[in-house]
Amino acid sequence: MKTVPGSSSGIGKATAILLARQGCKEILKNGSSENDTLVVPADLNNESEQDKLIEGTIAKFGQLDILVNSAGGAIMDKEGKTGVMQGIDVFDNHMQLDLRTVVMMTKKAIPHLMKTKGEVVSVSAIGADHHGNPQYMYGSMPKAALNQFTRSAAIELIRHGIRVNSVSPGFVNTGFGASMGIPEGIWNKMMDFMASRKECIPYGAVAQPNQIAQVIAFLADRNMSSYIIGQSIVVDGGSSLIMGMEAHDMQDLMRL
Image (cartoon, rainbow, N blue to C red; front, top):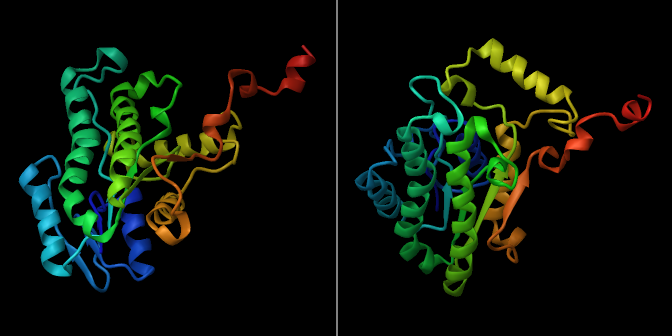
């Protein structure tokens, strides 16, 4: 049995659907039900709601094999501020949703995952890596902490047979723009711009949620990825590989 908190949209929804099609039983938070699934609406910021997810899973299916932590979202400053000057409530809310819920859901799942020698896969982001991300600073910070949690928890929990990994997506065509209040037309133009610029996405296309879901499914499948623990697999079409000097055509620069 697989639990996918945050499966109402975007990467979480794509992951839940993919795992369901592969024959897994799912518990979906605010998601679309497929055969042999359990839908549990829940506010993951609320610990009693977290308990409801876990307990509902065990009550219906009797066990828990995989936990996919995919909850997250855009939390914007009420006054439109960015970077350091965003309200501290933006920082607090990101830490709560993007980090604390992952830690708490993992802690609550551990006793059940120990019985099944199960898996934990969390959704991080390339913004957690070494480069700065001032426009989305407070969203990137908990993801960096999530990666450290993944590494440390992996070392501890593998002793109990539990594997812990994460996936770090780059630009993905989800409802993220709408949650930021960006009109669909403008968001689509932004995505098209990113896809057309090699300094943004060398692959030449924005990822679709199912492309990220496929990597999550790989990490959740012990037959396919049994020797991988404590890793955050980057899935970004090459975005994080670009150095400043590679943001421009070096042949053109040499002709200056």
